[in-house]
Image (cartoon, rainbow, N blue to C red; front, side, top):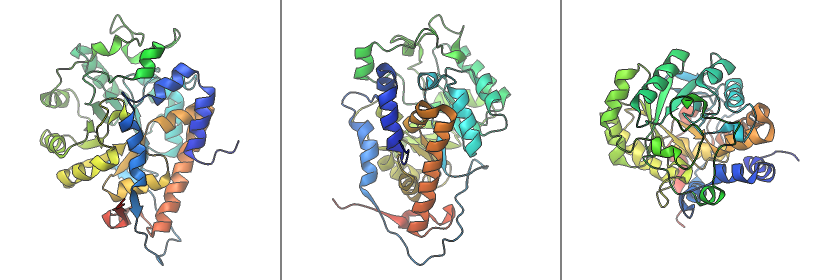
Length: 353
């Protein structure tokens, strides 16, 4: 079967992954309204393409906090990559390096930070942190990541408790016996992912904990999970260097906004003081272009990266990224932009429907 677009990889993953793994990756909270809205919202945004512009030479590169990447797509933090491919996050890291993009490694990786770092030396990697009740564990993770050369710290802030994902409840989801949350081995008695595991997360985390994190590390702090101008303002005030507009792939509070809709008010509130990124619902190169037109510096893909892994590991993920890259370049050219710097709000309008 020719893999032509990201939905081809989705169909493959759904067919060949064990049901419990597919359900875990696909799950949204409650009715999955927000998960589905993340994708549908892009269909309400129309381009205002410009014609007769010289697009014979295209420059699709951009920078993340000063580090150059080949095009404005990165890999969002998702857990348990070994559920999709035996080499897990090591394959993810290698694919990201091959494509010269940013990979955000999850606290809940099935490979250690050391394995991820060694798999792709010299590549752009950030580390995603959940703050646990045992603060010493979180502190050690941050310091390990910095020592290994990770270049950013991404605090996921929208998960004081886990959203209700019905299929995971029905399936009694837990990691298979041969897989472990490698970064937390020995840190807790519970190192198998079970319904009780997320009770180790600290629901008392507040904005003041940004100061605590800043005291632990020199790494730039990016906060993930912001959907409102109020929280965007607070993020800037607390000295973060970046914001990821995210609703956790629709896995947390069902009934929240699509991230592409929330992006507009966050960008407006931030006024260029910090970089703003987005995840959720990116399925085509034209989606990337829409997000950049509305003010995102870069987008991150979650589920599509897992579909690529499920297809052919590192090679499959590179295929997914190449398709997105080619589609993004083509969309830019057809909209009349020869470089990323030419993309702006003038390029899109919201559908009147």
